[in-house]
Figure (cartoon, rainbow, N blue to C red):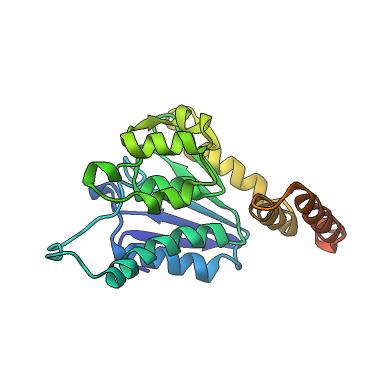
Length: 246
């Protein structure tokens, strides 16, 4: 456990809650490392992972607490500082358990990437998304790396260059968000989805993610062959058949 991130596990459901609402859930390096550690440790032990946040905002980006370093770090040091973020995004992608994010309020910078790299993103009607790095003269390729296969390139480049804040419905039209809940109902919508997915056969739940992520970069012929293989293996598993009632 680390301050500002709450992790709870009930049966096969892992819930991670960002809990620094006083600073809009801006995440420190220690919190980002802890989040990455948790995802890497638990992703193959959970059936489903849900990412939420307490307070008015989902996450306003990275929080730099204390004095900032003077001067520009060397390239290798800078790379190590940034690798904790790339690792966190990668842990969401590599998770065998599907990851659902529930977004209320603002999701900016790192928060936008973390929310939208999830397999499913449920946004409250009041949610707002922005890639704000250009406002701070920061190269935004870290955020872009998490969204490059989620958002069409023209939309992604526009968001990066303008740093424009968009609402939840706009975010859904470009593929950054899966569904939009009426104001105040995002948790209820996500909870209903969690309840449904927790009842699904675990092999099918994992196979959908495996296929969705594995088939996208390959040509259609190989994608079909991949689908045929997964279909045969998973559908013939005893875990896919309902348990017999006594």
